[in-house]
Length: 342
Image (tube, rainbow, N blue to C red; front, side, top):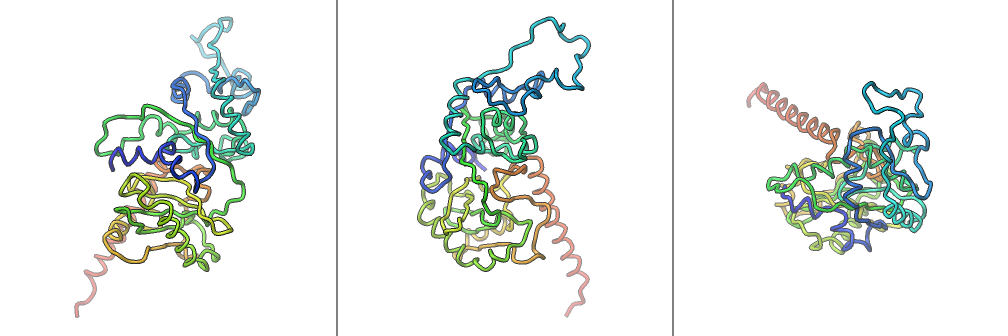
């Protein structure tokens, strides 16, 4: 994977071109002071002081001394000495407040590449639904996925020349509460050719999707031909889409080919082979209860859940899947070896 392939998957890079076919999103350039606040790990977990009095988890995160189990450790500053003031980003907060109101009062946040899916547990709703700047700051500050964006986005690149981009952005995406998990799909493009489509939610069987399989393949393929083909900067990449009840296809995200991107119901070897063979696009869904993949959490909207592409759990699952494939190949060789000849 090349550095440029990762760079062009940043939302601020692709969204302006694909805005008409994507989810409504407002993007804000983040000041470096806010980035340093997110990556800083010294002192208590403090949220920025809100100029609009919209605090997430009030009286708990802002004031750790109010916690029953809070103790001043030996050798720390005397209680009478003034402590450092909590961080404050009033200009950024007011811009974000305006964007949230313009998007209907609720958003989910995303940095250049990742959303804080792994931190959803800390919110009052257990999702990435945010209605204030403090909600957003809480999720971003608590997320390891965000730290990966901030510090290690290019670690998997063969031509790595930098550890992070020069500028970070916060994308606020309109919150939709009633999306159906079975209707998001990942599309794989090799040498600018759509070679595979996989259902994103592979932990459950949805008979209605099976009934519409051919129709869904045609809808997504036509969407690619009309809106994506030849318009994205990379030769090899993946993109995620959501199909609405009225048969419209919405672009959700772009991801690099390989590396930390999950191939879902494919293997990367199958997809690369598909890129060398001219045939109908291979469209895979969970077609029965027997083909469900338990434990692989990919429900829509993917940015709302606590599993992150590139996270430790993502890498663990990919490694586990590769190990399983190797074991199966080894078992097949053993069985073949002991079969009687003739």
